[in-house]
Length: 119
Length: 111
Image 1 (cartoon, one colour):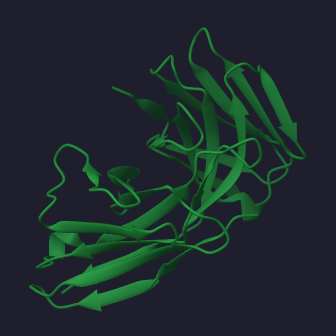
Image 2 (cartoon, rainbow over the protein chains, first blue to last red; image 1 turned 180 degrees about the vertical axis):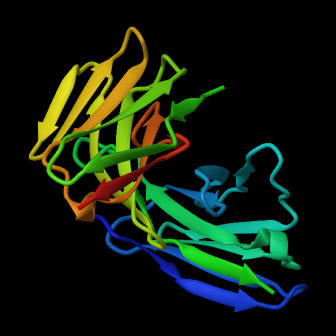
């Protein structure tokens, strides 16, 4: 089946620094990638949708200048948390999907997640 | 907007059946999913059902869908301690579009 990887799997950083998280589709081309955030003991909330080669669409309440998303290729999307603060500590999960043609699976695949802790 | 609700907690004895319930509001939902998340881990897709189906069975898992009431349930037969996790109900309009997750149900299996 299709595999999505994330790197790093966990990161600890100091307040005020920026952190980049990568999401890669390993064996398929992802026309769309999604970024979700999960706070402890809560559900996953969609942050933004990114389509290859175009600007990301952010959900209401998500600061686009703080969470920079780049989807430069069909296999890679990056999320950069700029000037991170302790309240940004969370579990960030990406997913990747593609619009199927006459073959393929009409679904999306989730990465294993990245746990960010900001001190 | 979309809203997906679940009860927060369920406790069952090992060997019993577990039933986790979910309600959703978006009538245009076509794909309805059940995901499992173990502590500190990512999401594992357990199963999914299309909105034109009433039931789907996959080994110990049975999914029931009442589209009229927008009610989805997951039954786990012969629940094992390894089934202890948080279970998320989720929906999407198309499989490649964004997924809206429920609040999650924590399943505790008592040995």
